[in-house]
Length: 111
Image (cartoon, rainbow, N blue to C red; front, top):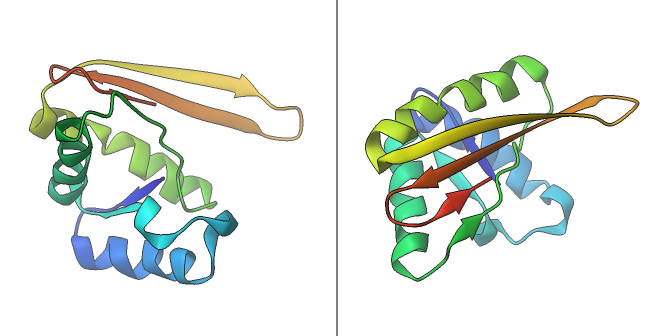
């Protein structure tokens, strides 16, 4: 799961509050929160450990902030050398879900 913003303090203030509240029972260290550079660095660490897949889910429920996080994937793309981005829209009946799948040149898939 992730939350990132234009600046790390904004991301930590928003995402940190969600994590402290106990987001869906996940351990705080199972999340990535920060600006594009810190998110890219964290994803690269996972690749270096041998992970091939990372599932991304926004920590925020406000549509405007969630869409802004997804839009910032282009910043992470530039830092991580992402070779492909695919957006998947799913009609969940009561609300739409947006999934993003990214592939990097390091062989890790983020989705």
